[in-house]
Image (cartoon, rainbow, N blue to C red; front, side, top):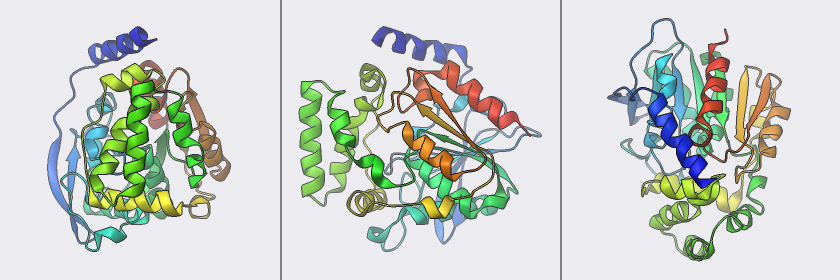
Length: 302
């Protein structure tokens, strides 16, 4: 499986053209300066906003991973408030995911885009669903990729499942990271936790080891994560009945239970679930041959 996963990843890199250059800009949104990055415009195509997950990471978690989608449409990325090159909010310790969600519609207006499509991955999938519920008229279609669930119930047994996917050394590292995360009010502890658990996100953990995420810290992202971890959340009432077309993509071997996609679908009357076999949390890397045609077909529909 390790050889197959690495071979698929290498083949994907060969099969698609090099990613285009992104044009960067600073855009004022809700009183903060946001770093925004765009691929070249494509005439007649609806732009696609891409919202990364990871809570503390910036747009590079999805770029150039999603660059094959740029052939048919302009991709818009941004660093969420207090992440990457975007400014942190005042009172950063009070940061909430709802603040991230409200930024999305305001960003669309600031960019002068009347209507766009939205794609959110992992934590960014939750942000995307909340944001689109607040900006229905500005959104044509929505794609989520291995999104967190509509409630924080997915966290029950989450780390226990991760341990079953790791070797002895990796389990020790994760155990130590969990202790540090629970014990210390320490932003760096979340970065180590993310890196320790990362191989468990993949159907093939060896591919996860090959694609380790960067070290990233964010006081804003840490505050959001800590609130979710201690208080939990329930977004069902916020998104219930959202009636635009939604594609809920989920890897069948994701550490996040695929059943969370079904939970979203039960709330969204025009949603459909698409599970990708032999893929974990990052199907655009693990099964690009299935992922990209699926998303392209959905976004190409009127």
